[in-house]
Length: 424
Image 1 (cartoon, rainbow, N blue to C red):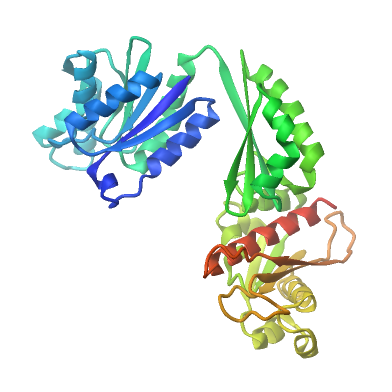
Image 2 (cartoon, one colour):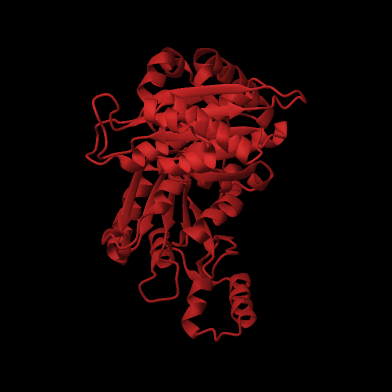
């Protein structure tokens, strides 16, 4: 089954609005095993929309159109689709009643042009919009399906998951199930090189790599008559991947490194504190993005100046003088100070040179040390684990890689804690 994404809106062509809908729909369709070979953007013009729709239907089974469902004169998506299929427009009473109730609830006047949003091509499948006023809809004709959704991302994303996804799954008698393997510390090309033959020869499930900033995802997708059959096909493939590159895998079906870390800390009933120099609080920010982080994250110190490293974290003056602020020794003492001074089981630290200035031949831009200190195994007995890891995150791709270096430093710091937790 193939799909095409057609986004409507002159504001998208002018660059006034970033087209996040296409990226979202592409990811969602790929996860369902629906292949998207083309994406297009067209302005608010019925003639050009009609041309693009005709082309899209000539080469795809499903066309998903976003935008152009509003109440104004230039919102012409439904009318254009109806004309293409030779369908009449008619009032959808349930949608009209929902609109009337919406305006009544907020004590606002419903102007006559709002009724346009409840007009649908005959025999449409209507999708409720619990997040705005414009309903979504689908027209099925001659083995072709056109799905129309509103433009705002805050509406389209939950609508797709709640309404459109179940509709699409019913269109096929084959179930598709995907699982995602999350990898850090190994680039996309290295992953493909290691798994090339397996990925190339695996037809069901299919294995597709996706590069993210500092990470790689492998999406393993199987088709079968039911979920049980799909999972039975996926599990051996994931085992094979783990056997080959398991040391670089930080989770299966986890949203992010910070999600994986908070979950694992919660399971092991351990707490963590942070001591950050070059990352400037980014690790703490990422951890506290996750619901439930208050149970495991006690706090952090952003120790940019050496005096703060010494006063608040207990880094020895002699350590800084002898080895420098960017060193294995300083990173270890920062991590230990964070754990002990904030009464946490684990302390994590970063110290490095994010650039673009400040680098030397001995300590270049991109050099980062991550320190970890643990004083509990999580099993009742007190033990100490000290670890420092040296990284160089400079890639030479941009003149100023500062934010890139800081983000990779935070990601790898989170991952190093995950690896330590595997010992418990």
